[in-house]
Image 1 (spheres, rainbow, N blue to C red):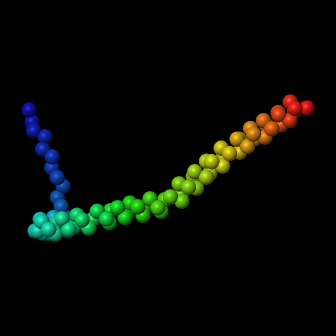
Image 2 (cartoon, rainbow, N blue to C red):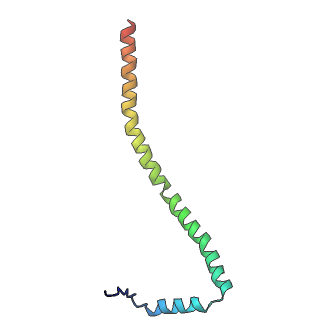
Amino acid sequence: MEKLILKLPNLSDAGARLVSSLTNLGMFWKLALIALMIPVAALSIAGAALNNTDRLKYEYDNLYGFMLIPIIALDEGNLHAETLSAT
């Protein structure tokens, strides 16, 4: 039975330098980078969410408007039915 060997793509020079520089950092600086990246990631996710909130609100209002028209028509129909049955 043959072994399945996964071959990773070669890193570019910039990627190799980045990996090399990260391995040469001390543990404190690696943890400091992680601690710095967590708030950056959280803020970028929150920014993207807030940026698209108004688009979601538009879609919700649009959907609600289309649902509201038939509901108002039904309510007016019930009102007319009640006035006809009262006389």
